Image (cartoon, rainbow, N blue to C red; front, side, top):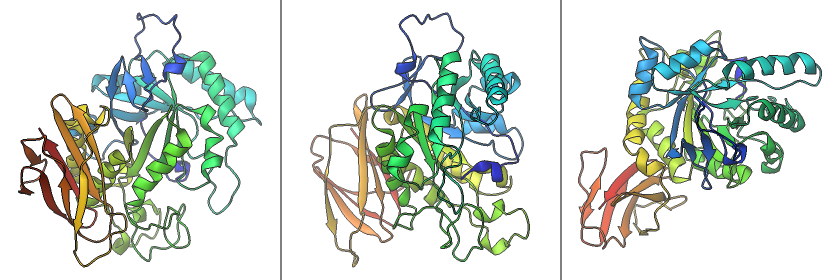
Length: 411
């Protein structure tokens, strides 16, 4: 959503650069990071691929910087100050900074404002990327773009003329045509969209929700729309850009400034957070950012639930930043009395001697599934779960509840 309507607290950002931005004359005497986008869209930092886990806002409560780092996050959104970037650096975090755009109506003034921030911060060691405008195409209930593509592109050209070493991040609304969003591509190396599908039925009208009470506009009303929006943004971005997803870390009703209905305060559950994150990975996302923590009270269970998901991702970061594995099992379903619509979606990643199989049930109904073709692997285990599976020399059989997630290690 266009966050200037809601955002009261400062939020932190990190950015990463594309190989197209780094000239042969670049010397290794710089303080800042060498950031590139690999051919698969993965962010590389000083030559090392890294899966990005970021926060737009730090959690409410004591010692939020430390808690963010210990939870497994590696990126935060910060204000345009050396102090904020130094704070991120102190806690071992990367950061990104929002610049806005250079308005045609106030070109000299806005250009000078952007220049000042670039000059002040471009060599900060924690800085990884810049952001221009959030959701430039989005105007609630209207069709015209809030910020036209040529303005974003010209702003990007100005940024690169002063700082050619940090890439530019652009987050889009989940709506608008692919062709419309592609017009903005010259203005970024990292493309994202924000989708927040956990919305209570019957919620009163509020900013960024359609009359049917949904934020997204696909036929799929379930949380499995996340994967479809990843696919859409990869279509927008093409192979040469990174694709991030901005996911839900808040309850929609808490965005209402007055007259909140306590019965409508609905947070994503741990299972939902886990499904949305891992489904995005299955669909090939290069990073995950979470929005809304400044609206989430410190005593909410959401932070602990989100932390548990982030720590899972952190433990497998070597796999998440690796190339996809050539190993693809065959899937056979057993009848549960339901049709299969989306069914099991999965990916495999290899790092070292092992392979992980990440599988999610994208259906609102349970599935009973067999993964076949596992003869190569002598050991099979389910990670992050104290449960056993039906396991023989060639197959794994498992039962998935609606929107369930499994991560198997095969070795």
